[in-house]
Each structure stands twice: as structure tokens, then as C-alpha cells.
Length: 119
Length: 119
Image: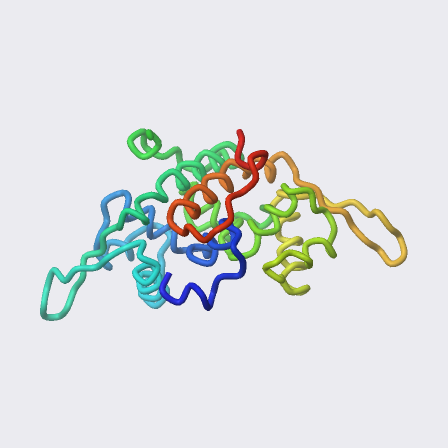
């Protein structure tokens, strides 16, 4: 995570994880990447209605933490496609566990598709 | 989660979960509760050095979300013991998954004790 040494609160793996993605948006964007989205405009279309400034901030932080990489797909104006790294993709089991918990305790939440929940 | 209808961004179980604990501190406090801490003063002693105002805010939100309950253990001055509800305790698998991810990708993080990691 780039300036990890500045931000890390302890050696606890839970605190360390939350230093990276402990906010309301990072894992929503990661969900979108896992479900096939890769472009700025696609993230903006998600039902949670992320704002452009939060999206830009979180993408930059995720790149710094090496959860994603970006590659230009258009030169003028510059446009980037975002892809998960192995480290980012490896959060898929955490999102499954989070979905299971929410589905158990908040029956009104959506059931994710089978392909998302299967190991 | 009390005023859930006001805060929920979508029916997505991931977004819904993050509406409840998507911040840098809630799951650190939950870790402390899982490891046997129950009192305000004990949470303040953790190595992450949470501040009193953030701790008070997060405990109130966790109670509102029915992750914890509190009971007075002393009348004057009033002091409370905080306990996990079933909903709160059911986040233990998520914290295990988070720990596994951090241990894989940040080798400097602590390995949790076996009793914490065993299902």
C-alpha cells in the first residue's frame, strides 16, 4: 500500500486490512471489478451511485495498494481500463463471506449469483 | 441497523455490510470483543490507540446495528460492559478471512492464535 508504513496502526492483520479497504466504497468497486466492470463510466452506473470524486480517490488508493492496475485504452481524451491484480482478486473469498453474513442477517439483501459464490 | 432505510445504498449484500461496518475501526473493536475485551478502558488499551470520541461513536453505532449490547456493571459513575450479539459474533468468519488475506499479502502482519482461526 505505498505509504503503508505511514498509515499502518499495528501489525494486526485485521487492522492492516482495514487500513487498505476499511471504507464504504473500496470493496463496492472491487465487487464491480470481479463482476466484469473495468471502466470509470461503468463504475458510475452501479446502483450505489458513487460520486466521481470518491471514485477517482478510491481507484488511486487501490492502485497504490496494488489491488488494481490501469491501462490506457484511449489516448484522447485519456481513458483507462482497470484490472484486478492477484492481490485484489484474492479478496473474492472475503466478499463471499460478507455476502453470506448479510444474506443471513438482512433477508432483504440480494442473493449473489452462483458463479460469484462458488469457490 | 436502526436507521437502515436511510443509509442503505442498494440491496447488494456487500454494500449493505459496508453501510454497517465499512470504516477503519468497527471491526477492530469487534476483534477486541471476540478476544475477550468488554470494557471501554480495555478497548482504549489496544495497540491501534483508538480515540475516546471515535470509540464512543462506533460503540453507539454497533449497538444501533445490533452487533453488540451493553449492560451496566457499575452505577456511579456509570460504566458499561459490551457483549457481542449473535449477529456480531457471526462476523468471526469474516475476520478469519480478512486475517488470511493479510497474512498472505503482508508477511509482516501477525499470525492470529489458533483458537481465533479455527472454525
